Image 1 (spheres, rainbow, N blue to C red):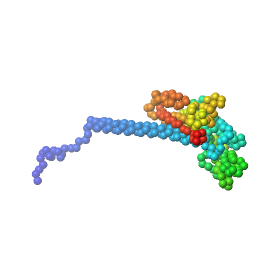
Image 2: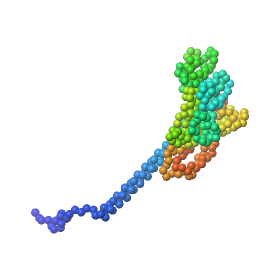
Image 3: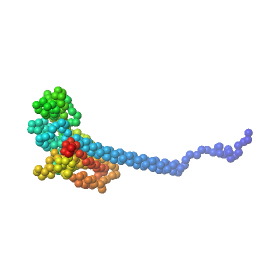
Image 4: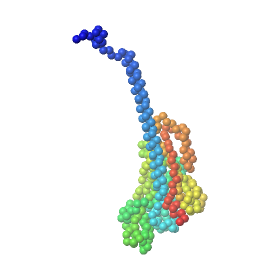
Length: 335
């Protein structure tokens, strides 16, 4: 076998060398630069994702609030088979709970107006707790769309209309099953009863009052013999309503106002003549956006005009909708 050359022996016998201090420092610096770049990219991506989620929740909440209000406005004034000839329309306090005080009566024949409201400067009904200043409140009245069997019509005001010609009376308004004796067209089966619905929508200064300060759309509803307040949508900061009054009884709005005109005898001084509503909702993010300050945006809120620039770290979006009161406007249309 041939002996290895001197150069080959030198290569094999050379002792292994580690990194020098300078090489180690350079490698650490490069690693820190790479890690810093990755961290910055990850941080930016994460912040961007959080901002997209925040904006998405904000828009979704505002859209849900508008849709929720719109759906209830559309069915306001649903009084089932009740014949409205000779009715005297009432505008009761939405916080009253006694069965004889909420606007319904058989003799004399009275019904509450389907829609009414309070402007920002109006006095707040007692049950609309923590109402935010300068925001509107909307009151809607109707019957429950779902009918109730007379035997189950208890612990709440119900209305029953007869379809039987031989019934001595044609309408019953009560809260006990035994009172509902009106019959259907066959004059045998008992007619369905309909629960009375009274709902007030307003903006509260808090969701869980005493715990947070998140502005929230709430609903105060007649449940049995009490008013129950329910938080509906967090982040609703402002709500304004314009009411479309039908002044010539053709089912179409002729003038829009944020309240009654105050002119005695005028068509736009009667809530019963409201056939549509414009709803304005201003949504605000429930948490602040780091590094963001709103210094330029204003939002048009109908009768309340433009909002002032907030100058705070919350993002906002404004949505609106035009809604027709089908049960009021439809009855006025020419066949």
